Image 1 (tube, rainbow, N blue to C red):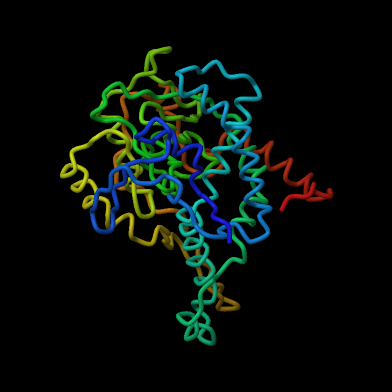
Image 2 (cartoon, rainbow, N blue to C red):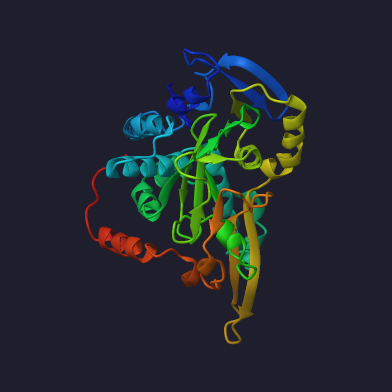
Length: 358
């Protein structure tokens, strides 16, 4: 059986504590234990996670090989990226998002909640619902088959780089490191739907790439980055808040490089433990009606990923004034400008033979 790393070693090595890039520090969250100078090789991996045929693992490895030089460039503070660099980084981020057990679990829970709701009002099926679970066959391959569409959805986002300048609050990385945020939609009081969709206005995607730098994709029609290029430095409060999101979004542990205040992060762990261990699906019935002729009940449901228990206000990013006052009520109001183009390409693709992917 092969080991499949859902957070690649090429990324974890940036958080190593030794010159040979073989060891790192770990905060184990279930028992609040700190481990120092632990072997990096065995971290964030499972046996045959992506299947025994290795095809999907090889596909992820190929994407990593394209993105590795681009990430290395960013880790020197160089944001002068070519068109190809931009494409490789966005493809890598989309792939990293979908390849972790944490992401699969969150989406499985949402689908399970939605499908189980369908027969709930049918007495013939209701008594059997608790005995069954909805399980997707080979979910990693399923999401990988949609990777081109996911890449297309984020292709309009602008790349930025965030730098921590104080070793006290350097960036940490968890086992589900891509964080989806949306301060823009969170500011809209009448927006009741998800704020984590890839097609939504105001999307921000953040992933730490080393203790010093975090890579960010953001909707440049909605936001401006306030850190002064080329320094790209953000303050300690924002670095710590981004680490808090890693604590919320991880599976079992957080990796770090610099010596930290253990009691401080044990407190962080206790703050976010309930969220981290909870079912991440957020299911709510927001409307219903009954057909007078048939007696059938129709329900409008809201099914999405549970919101992070952290305020999404930062000093390094701000909504543009004209967008801040814009009204967002329906999904048509909220979807980004490139989404219709992506959907059109999907429809065209359905009528063609797709190139072979595992």
